[in-house]
Length: 470
Image (tube, rainbow, N blue to C red):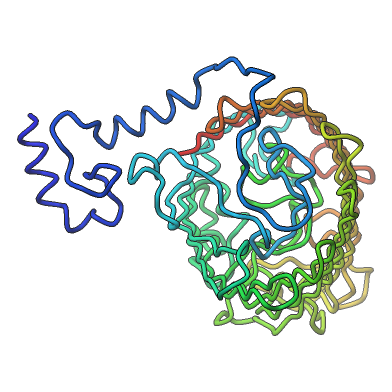
């Protein structure tokens, strides 16, 4: 068996040498008795899940190199240690992440990394047909695969100030959550034509160029990236909770274009970009040049961060998800273990076809519940969400979320009503590779029946996900 393994590895050595699947950690051909790829992979999880007593008198482990302000939070258990901004790696922070798959491949020695996760979920709901507008557990009372995600990425080195550096990111997402990242023009017929339960989406595909001598550093992102404002993101490990707020469930998800992010000072980050509009490829019908401008300010104590964005701004006329978004986020840290995150926005489209009129709507786009006798109208929505999160241990936090959304003309959800939701969650990590997030949630529509396809005003759900990182 040993000789057969050596022959097989030799036959595919030229194909797999860059990843080191059949190689030892030093890149050489494996010797007899050296742990193989799957043994190294399993050993990572064994050590990650092993409970080790911590000596309080021992010196802390060295942290990754960093410029700028200190990190305000612990991660884990929180999804990020920084007050985050979108559209760029954190400038001045090294990539200190180690992943099970890369450790098995080449001892985690390369800057290009391959990793991802699997996220099954299960939910119980008082609704029977649909949980909408709850995202992302759209289908009630079932077990499903929300996300199976593979990343290939290289982060630019933005700690150093000597030379231009570069990075890239490629994403493959499969699962029920593809419907929330789908862009018109990127395999979008799966959703817009066929409304499939499961689908594939190349959610993020971009190049990063880091320029060190513009202020404290500048990152230029070119390609398709997450729409940058807000607390939440579509990829599951980047969120506090398993499900999303009502606010996030209807706002833009990804944009394609170019975005400049400048670390102007240690406390100020400014951003400006040009995209094809929200959730649409530049080559798709309905794409429009759209501007994004943002500013992020963090206090010297790192106890507060304010992030304001005008996102995807153009003439605002009705088109495929041509939302004009004005968004503000405030993070406040009461202590190292207790913080809140609050977001509010106003969004709108102009000249949206009335559902009672004769104007046609876009494929995949909604009309508005305009007043009687008009062919089109302004369709606004505004929303507010706040999180309060308490760290209980290095592996666990509890959180509560309150959320308000007013879909004034029903364009986003289909019912012109105000909504609220309240969610309580416990997030627990096993090591750094498995995360479990059970939650209890209550939703209410204030003006009319808007849940379970318009049959009830209330919805109660119990849900949990499990994120297994590889």
